Figure 1 (cartoon, rainbow, N blue to C red):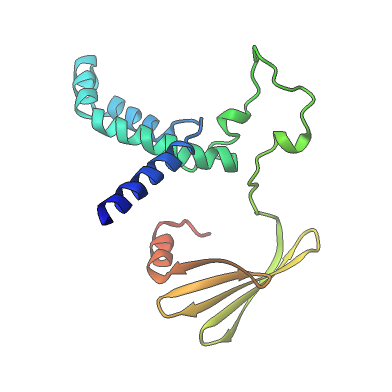
Figure 2: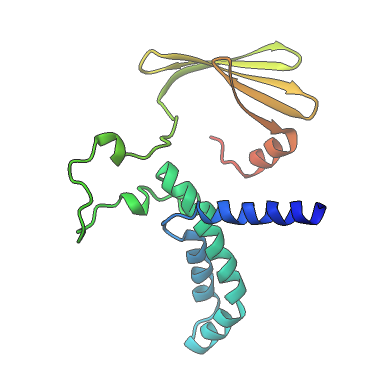
Length: 181
């Protein structure tokens, strides 16, 4: 019974993940190619390295297809290359015009960035476990971002709506790699 449940879970996971693959820049595979071209300066060495790296190319391509290109498709920006717009949003001379009268909402990225120009932000400590940032945007809109520490993680709320929970370790790793200015 347990083996059947595990097999069903694996089949479901593989099935769902194959439905999420999206067209995109294939930036991870591009990074592997760029590495290959920089390491060796002649065609025979590059070919040899290409053959040795073939499993890496496969893994990079699968990561692109099912993870990074999907993010690019839904957000409009590739997380590896940082390039925007998404490949699927670049105008082209199409042979088949699906619908040139398409509603404007169908031609925009579905998950737009929430970045807005901030006029001011004030950070204050509510208690030993709660920090709050009051944000004023240039448009005059206001928002409140609150972080509540619970054991080894912090839960974030934007205007009293739960957003996410992040572990202290995740935040430390982010701070190590972030270029905060």
